[in-house]
Image (cartoon, rainbow, N blue to C red; front, side, top):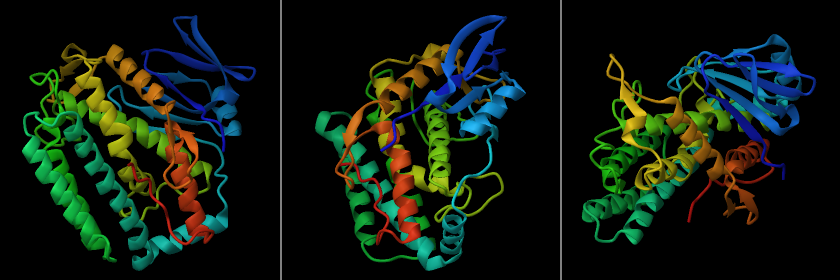
Length: 343
């Protein structure tokens, strides 16, 4: 098992990243903010107006450190990476499976089973901890509905059916998401999922954490030799990391949604850290982004016992472990893809 490496998130506008021997230097107005050895990094994520020197890009390309550029609000712009190191035979097998409807449906179904299971677990944990909270009966109904959908997925289904089940499950899950918010309810109201752009504080938080998870998932898939762009559940679309989005479906409830709810319910983020732009989109302040990134990194350092491997791993390794298991299945080393099922 590899060590959990770090991602460097740069949010200070006007920062300049450059190379000093085998380290990354971050400077602002000529003053050095931090110096990080390149061997401790697996990725660099730059938000907004950040400059990166060509020598540092070259060093990152040599060492397999991906540099991602996002807007100030977290929307993806571009990525800089070195030569693809994936096994060509593995990628050819991936492409063949993606083109075969039955094979693609098998993987997609496993992913959605995990997504429904983990979404249901989030709701169940809420009820266990808050049995008399407002909306408890509605949450119970959604849990029952997710259980019914899981029963349907016990039999093989077509891709179209699986996508329909996923859409229905997401609708029922987010329909009761507002009941999971127990603090700051006037400032963090969730009516429905809005993505581009996020139209309220809660959606802004969700979208930002999903962006962080997307970066980690893409890096994990590339590290095991899979193509992040060619998925099984998500259709191919230029510029969309379909396989990363597939893998994220099973991880989002556990890794992202729970973190967002904790940040709000424990009052680690406040309404003052959000503002609405002229277009109606909600954006976070730089300080709030830093707080969220810090909480995300701390979450990644927690340890769990992986349900399939039966080994203790850090939470931040989940995307990598699932990518590795998926690669083993595609190569034919194991009989089925074991998704992450949170219990």
